[in-house]
Length: 96
Image 1 (cartoon, rainbow, N blue to C red):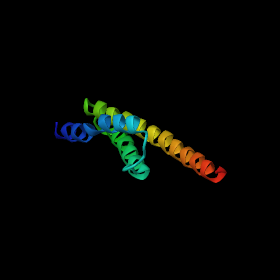
Image 2: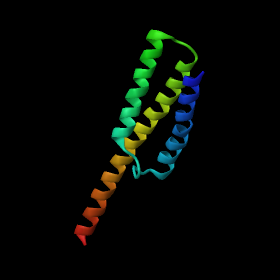
Image 3: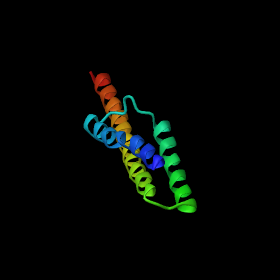
Image 4: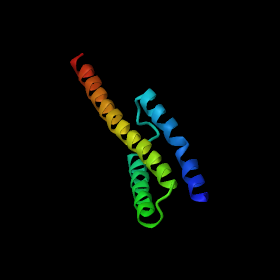
């Protein structure tokens, strides 16, 4: 029960994080290394649950993994858009 509560507490923030990433279309304040570490951690948690004690907590791990994965994808999309935007802005300045 306490493991589930821990995972739920961690997981409460992920949907809000994804919405913020989507709305702002920015990587500001985000760390891809942090997101990747959390993603990998959830994978290990899922493997542990599958090997030792598969129960309802597994669903919380999967839920969190999905949202962290979505946030990682949004990070990549937003980082690319930021790079393209900066390159485009730089070209516009040089043309003047």
